[in-house]
Each structure stands twice: as structure tokens, then as C-alpha cells.
Length: 280
Image 1 (spheres, rainbow, N blue to C red):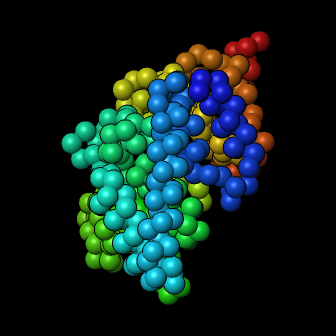
Image 2 (image 1 turned 30 degrees about the vertical axis):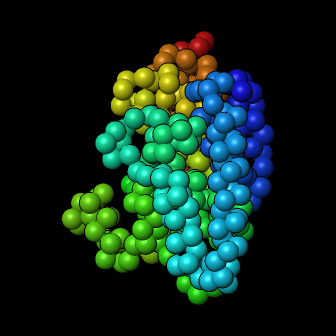
């Protein structure tokens, strides 16, 4: 698949309702933008094989089929981390390959959100209620059942995390004064998970001083989330840094169409005025 084909497919995905997004396929499309023709078909087949194996394992477990959240966690952890050997890449965490689902499927190593997408893909095949969470700094999953749910760390081999584990993880991410709040464990939609995956790539490119590459990552994020107002503002500022004033103005105007009020809108109008003056 070429980058152009992948981007057209991402734009089509951006028009879909949340519940119709196939998250594994969408993550492969994001990877295919940067890896044209490199293993896309193999990665797609690998995803299909994982889904088939998940359905077989899940249907064979009576407790999981009956809706026991812990049993469902054990099934998916056993399949992905036990049988197939997927693990968090602690040795080369910042390697961009850890955010590319094509590379993750090849290397069996990845970031928390990339590994979490494999969980979500398998759960989707089973019809189980598994979702990403809003936990900051480290992607976690919520595995729901008929009675309660389990919070799972896909980077940690699918381990279940209790309240004490979550507090310790949060303090490691945000400092000793950070306190766990219920909203940090709220389920998030598939689109938000995909944005979190791609944001890893964008941030790594920014840290490397690759503004054009970071902008390209942001533009791909906007293909799947065309109504994400903050992303339009960010793309506008990156275009400005690259002296692409016409593109910057188009992005800031899109931001204002989506978020026409508030302090950020007032600042955006001032930027738009200054940029128009530069074009005249």
C-alpha cells in the first residue's frame, strides 16, 4: 500500500462513526503511511490470525464467555503475551518502531498503546467490552465483565492493576504529589486511542527537531479526527514555524470554525490577522 492510498483510507475512516472503526486496521493504515509496501499484507494477515486465535481461546473458556472480567483478562494475556510473546520494549522505548503496528507485529515489542491496540483488536473479534482508558502517561485498558472490571497494563504483560498499583504508577509518571482520580480510568473511544498512538510519533519527531515530520504526523491525526479543534491549532503553529503561512492560516480558520469562543479563539484570531497581513 502506498502512502497516498493509506491517507485516502484514513480520510474515509475519519468520516466513520466511532463504533464502526476497526482499530487494528486503522493502526495499520497509520503505519503504512511511513512504511509503504513494507509488510502491510503480512501485518494484516497477522492481525487476522490473532483475531481467529482470540475467538478460539475465548469461546473455549466458560468463565470468560459467561462474562468474568478476570477470566477475559487471562485469556487475552495468555494469547498475546504468553503464546505470541508480545511485550513492552523497555530497552529501546523511544524507537519509533514501537509506535508502528506493522513493526510491532514483526518485532513483538511495542509501546503500551500499540500493544493495547492488539488487545482491543482481539476483544473486538470476541465482542468483549474492552476499552482504552484516559490514564495519563501510560496507556491502560479496562476489561469489563458482568460484574465489575479489571484495569490492565498491556506493557506489563497484561497484568491486572489494583488501586495501590495505579497510585504508584501515577506517581512514577507525574510525581509524588499526583493523586489518582476516577476520571483517569474512564473508558475512551477508538479514535482517541489511535490519536494517542500517533501522538507518540509526532512527539518523537518534535524532540528530534523534525518539524516537517511532526506536522505530517499531525496531519494524519486530523485525517482520522477531522473535528479535533486543538490539533488544527497545533498544525497551524507548526506550519507557521515552517513558513507555510497560507497553510497555517487555513488551519487556524478551521480551528476557529470548530472552537469559535474563549481565550484560545481570541488568540487564534489575532494570529490569523497577523498571518493575513504577511500574505498581503
